[in-house]
Image 1 (spheres, rainbow, N blue to C red):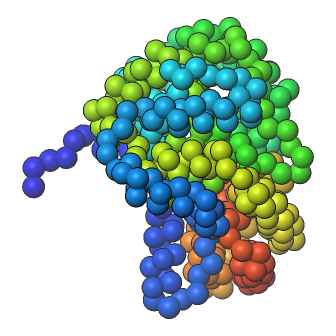
Image 2: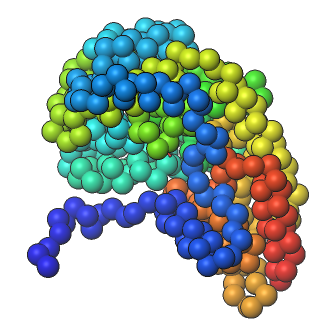
Image 3: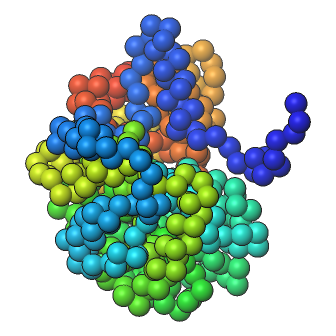
Amino acid sequence: MPSLASRLSVIKPSATIAISDRAAALRAQGIDVISFGVGEPDFPTPAHIREAAKAAIDKGATKYTRVRGIAPLITAIQDDCEKRRGVRPGADEIVCSVGAKHTLYNLAVALFEPGDEVIIPAPYWVSYPEQVLLVGATPKIVETREEDGFLLRPDALEKAIGPKTKGLVLCSPSNPTGGAYSEEKLRAIAAVLAKHPNVWVIVDEIYAQLVYGGFQQRSLLSIAPELRDRLVIVDGASKTYAMTGWRMGWMIAPKALCDACEMVQSQSTTNPTSFVQHATIAALQGDKAELDAMVREFEARRDLMVSGLNGVPGITCRVPEGAFYAFPSVKGLLGKKTADGTVLADDVAVASWMLEEAKSAVVPGSAFGAPGYVRLSYATSRELISSGVARIAAAVKTLR
Ligand code: PLP
């Protein structure tokens, strides 16, 4: 076979997808595995959104559209942004893509190149560093601390910024930690960034509507107008409207960057799927009752999972503000011996032992740049959360 491109040698496949595949393989063998690996709501896409897609197909919305999205979708995103962030972006400051992951990929292509450094706080969502690597730039990973809610400290940001820094990627609420920046924390980050005008600021707000316990979700878009000419907000339909398979994401960014990303996209996917654009208008403009019910249910599951995990000796879990992930420390299990004498040397060993012994699929924290932790998604039923945590607790009792 002729050779593959050398750029592939710097990236790796998604660890979260790998865990889901392994759990599916065990399930195919008839083994009852509880999956805490997935990163998608288990709720169906609300009916009015599905109906809008069907109606759009029947009305002939099955052809190419404008690359950045049809005008009514752009208007719906302007309205949604104004309602949620108090700032109305221009119609030329929005580009829709085939999922937020695609938005981020367009951004990496349009902004970063060899020699550039992109600051990414760890724990990070798996695709941020990989996309930066794919375009030949260098991720600069900055560790955060559990006691800071896994949030980037302003002094750590200041220290990390250097002459090569081209961008910063923040995620709030975060996958994998569920940590989210309060207004005060965002202001402190913005104050550092104000001193460094050559740094692009990308904030992934895909989980912004999934916050709990009265947490006040805020956006740099509304509180840091001074960053506006280099601020990018990434958003999408996947998590908020249980639309992961539909593939719809977008960004709010300065016009020149939107034009650049549209050009990149015009040479790859062209438009996001025509009728999905219509379905997304229905999602943004329609009744939010199902979204509200989903958020309430996620909050109850969060509380159930976090309190369950904190009841297991050797595991400690902070209460996340948003998203649908718990990110407990399993440092208290490291060095212990399993029934067959294997030593749990690291979080990868803990995750594979939990899969084999507790038949519960979790993702090792090292996949997110955070060894010593594991990620469990609570986008699954309360029954499964209770039995999965009980299985983990029972398995932990067998450790020596
Ligand atoms: N950003 C974060 C933090 C995510 O967790 C995900 C999905 O897991 C995405 C972006 C991508 O979402 P989409 O389905 O819109 O591509």
